[in-house]
Length: 157
Image (cartoon, rainbow, N blue to C red):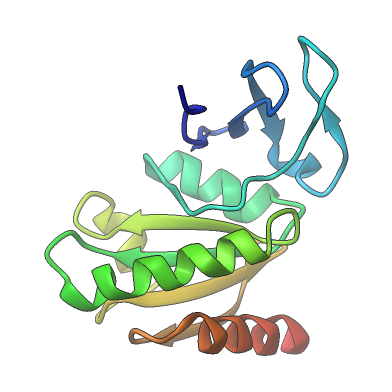
């Protein structure tokens, strides 16, 4: 049986303990800290995979409170290039586990977020640090180019 996928809520990232499987919430402000499972004491860290943002409140919480930079993938189900970039972004998330938090915003389900950040073409990536946009780019690209964009955005910010 595999561990449940990580999820987000307005208070933090919910991840399964690698030791016992217990679901633990890592508050956004502590994503860069060592957090221990409340049940068995095993170290739990920010996940190395992209996590779907369920609602506007959660989006606002994660980008404003996260102690790690947040990479946002604005996408939609019908978008072919979005489906092409998803596995590349998954590689970036895995390679940066504990250093970045990668989240996905479905622009069809959260049009308010898309409008706020003037998302007019997808796939679009945004990098947030300390609640502010550090960089944005549009278009599908391989993992190495996504990583280079993120590194550039964070170097500027």
